[in-house]
Length: 321
Ligand SMILES: Nc1nc2c(ncn2[C@@H]2O[C@H](COP(=O)(O)OP(=O)(O)OP(=O)(O)O)[C@@H](O)[C@H]2O)c(=O)[nH]1
Ligand SMILES: [Mg+2]
Image (cartoon, rainbow, N blue to C red):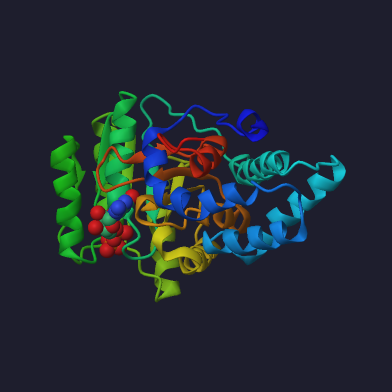
C-alpha cells in the first residue's frame, strides 16, 4: 500500500520512549493513523482529527493550529491522497516541537567550574526523581555529580535525596529539616568547588501557594550561587507531570512567569495516554523541552528529540506499521 512506503519511521528509534508512549500510541494515535485510511480527504477527517488531538491532551489552541496547518499544506501541495496528508501532519507536528527546541542554548561545561542545575516545579511532579535521573545521565558522560537538598521543607524530601545519593554513589549536601535552603546551597557550592565537581544538582521545594516566598527564595538561592559561579544556575529545569494534563500546563505557566526557566522535563510520560501534552508545552511555554521521564528508575530518562518523539507516537516495536 502507498502509505506503508510513505509513512514510516524517520528518526533513530528510542526504545524506552516508545514504551512509555505506548498508551498514547495504542489509544489516540492509532486512531489518528487509521483516520487516514480512507479514500479521500474530507471535512470529517479534519473534524475527527481535531477531536482526537484534544483527547491526547494536545490542547484546544494547538489542536486547532495543527489541523489548520494540515489544511494549509493539503491545499498548497494539492494533496489528494490521505496517506500523503498523514505524512504532512507528521511534519507539522515535528515542526511545532522544533520551534521550542530551537530556543535551546548551547551548554558548555567548563573544567573547574561546577555546572549548576536548579530543579523546580510544583509539589509531587517528579523533581527529586528527575534529579536522580539527571545525576545518572551526567555520570554516563563521565562527569562527577553532587546533589544539594535544597528542599528543606520536609524531612522525607531530604532522606529521599540521600537514598538516591547512596544508590548512585553521589555525595549529597544536606542540612536539617527546616534549615535555610540558601545555607544548604552555599555549602554545596563551596563543596562542589573544593572537590572539583562537574555538575551540582539542586533540589527545591515546590511551593507555589505563596508566590512572594517562592520568588524571594529562588532569587536568594540564585544570588548565593552567583557568589561562586557568575552565570549559575546554568540550567533551571522546570519539571511538568504529564499525567496532570492541561492542569499541569497551567501550573507550569504560572511557575514560569515567576522563575527564569531554561529547560523543561516532562515526567511520568509512561503513566498516561495523554502524551500529546508535549505539543501544548512546546507551544505555550516556548521553553525547550530537554528531557522526558519514562519511569521511576534513575535510568528512565530520555533526551527530547522532536522527530523521535513524533515517531514514537505513531510507531512502536511490534505495532506492525
Ligand atoms: N511512572 C513514573 N513515575 C514517576 C516518574 N517520575 C517520578 N515518578 C514518581 O512520582 C512520585 C513523585 O516523585 P518525586 O520525585 O518525589 O516528586 P517531587 O516533585 O520531588 O515531589 P515533592 O518533593 O513532594 O514536591 C514518586 O512516586 C516517583 O516515583 C516517571 O517518569 N514515571
Ligand atoms: Mg521532592
